[in-house]
Length: 441
Image (cartoon, rainbow, N blue to C red; front, side, top):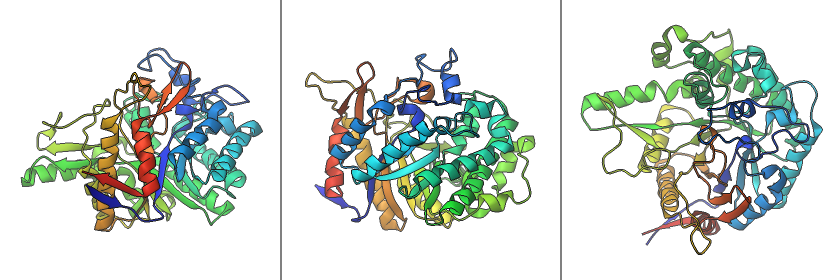
């Protein structure tokens, strides 16, 4: 048995997103979001479900915090619903929405759980979408106003703030392939949205720091390692090209102040309009970077190799390859001057079954997490400044276009009864947190 030990102040957490767990989609004054509209559109969600109820966290949040305490979480990453607070995206404030997050934050702190608040996890107010959504630069300013509002209400207690979760998914799944809300398929729009999200991030940074300059503010990017299929120079070159034309699209503007050369080649005539001052706005100093990591791509001169012979795959069709996380962390640490890093999402969807003993024996998820924790620790030994890990997800939930067909949680949710059951992976995670170490054979 080998033991991997973590620093005493390492933050062990779990993550969720508002639309995926809250439910109460039209209660207490909440406005409609683009995901409310999208999920209610026939044919958009795999199982024809919606997030109307989801995990009913809006009503069961106290029980969920009790579960967090039982697992021993040091931190909880969640998002606030913009339309719950500002039903039309701007204008009149829904105080009942603000009160909900007020109570949630107070209860987390009472449980000694550090809140990590994400301002945007994909649920744009539909009223703003009706004005053009993220293609409309005015929405970026509305986001800055919303950010300032939230900081004025919660900034005395919430220290860690994230502007956007995975802007590339918003831009390309929402506007290029149309698989996510608002379901557009327009290359030029997708690149403009990607740029506008970064500009909105910069405007929000300014707004947050104007209200409270002492907060820790960052952004969360989803990154995939692009590994070469062999040591042949041509395969290595192909993998580098794949990395530089995809993973650097948001990293370069944030940390270098310009788009990568590959972006211009990839976008072509769809390259966005960039206003004077935009790049300086985008490249402001960050207090941390959130990295969401799930898998890698294996690249040869012939393109991506899939499936990889001999590899295990999750229910999402993603390869299990934990060493790729270490390689990714080292690569971005070498390529950029980074602030401290948090692994803000890491987890796996597998088919879970409730056993006759009433438990969920999810050994594959447990092993996935074990491997990735160990590789994170190895990257830290390499010199990468990682401060914490957040498992995706605390609860089984509404998995966007997949509906309820994919389960990522370390806590099982029976969607009929809303009964929560901590899975074996969650019980194991509790031991990891309590001992601040990972045991591996």
